Figure 1: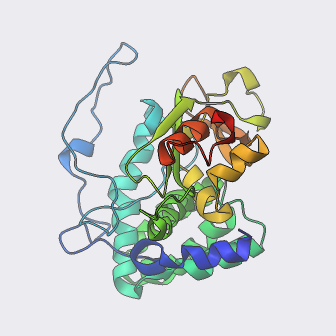
Figure 2 (figure 1 turned 30 degrees about the vertical axis):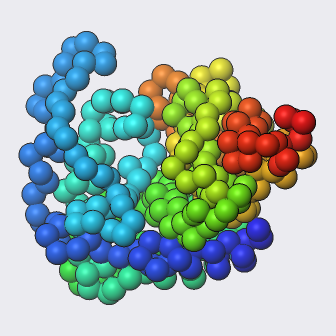
Amino acid sequence: MRAAAFAATIATAVAGGALVAPAAGAQGSSNDPAPTFYQPPTDLPAASGELIKTEPFPLAGAIPPIPGAEPISDGAGDGLPAGSRTRDMIARQRMLSDRVAPGVAAALGSTGPIDLTGVARRAADAGDSPSCRPQVAGMMILHALLPGLASRALDAVPAVALIAGADGRMALPVLAAAARASLQSALGAPRSSLVIGMSGNGTDVAITLAGIPGTWFTAPAPIAEDADVADGSAPPDAAPWTGDQGVIACAEMAIDARLCLDAGEAPGIAMGIASRTDGAWIGEGVARIPLPAVRDALDALVPDGRMSPASA
């Protein structure tokens, strides 16, 4: 699917192709205090990997949106998903909680939804990499937020601008949610081999097909090829496939598992590379869905093997 087609696909994105504010009950002002759980501790444990605190939490984001769900990337630096607990990371989380998330909510409450369809189309035309570093899309989202920030949450402007301008990743979770929403239209299509989801956790990568919803097929996560790492980082420090940005490529390219198996390889997907050490973003590269996961998915989709050349 070409870039222009992706823009059309993303039209059924979050809340019908728009980035919307959380429903009533969520934080609506950049001056609202962060929940107690998200207040960083004064003293950090001495031992690496020691649990600081834990608390049940339903979802970080949902489609349709739920009160308080605000999918915003934490920007450049140490990665929270990898378990990093440096002071810089904690400071970013506090800024997200105290300034960015409630500021964005207040801005959207003032100006209304952002047209992600138009954002995706113009960003793709400008050469954006949707599944890796959507810098143009991030700047467009920031531009759309500024009027609302100026009128409702002026004190949040520096924090939102810092996150949006750090490395272009602010748009990633928004585009991923939009892509996931658009792909739901194919969910449950009989015998469909369209890949509608993929994700990696640094150990395994998993895919799911439209024809067998709710079933995931895994294989060892590959390390990105053609790595372009930042100064001071070495390719051996690159972690295997980590993150769910691959779902953006699913919407962008309309990946057919059967065609992948027929061709003997899956298309290359541009993705960010995380450090094995601290989860920080260290570069970019290209990864491919492992064929064993593709083969297993097709064998489950059509047990008689008529769609799976490898099982013939």
